[in-house]
Figure (cartoon, rainbow, N blue to C red):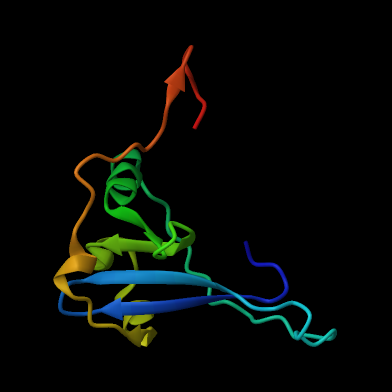
Amino acid sequence: MNSVGDTLKVYYDRVHDVVSLYLEKEDTNTSPKNYSKTVALEVERQYSFDEAASLLLDMVDILDSEGNFMGFRVFNASRYYDLDLLNSADEEILDESNLKRPDDKIIAKVANGQIIY
């Protein structure tokens, strides 16, 4: 996901408590050969099984008009992420169409006691 030329942009809608992470692919032919690595702020947090399951339920994919994956959005963001990190993200104001969640959501498919999707 984070190969040379890919950028992850983070936006936070404070009113609706929704964080959006967009993966933007850049043309690798125009990227400089010598690039500097961006140092990410790491915050260690361990989720319980219930918290992890809730996070999955609060997460939806962001797709473009052609159905291509662009990133993901997490509702109830302050439940899962540090507020200082959220407040350091760029501001985004989502309209009602972006706040709809799918009626049905497949998280995983299980067959013979194994997760296959």
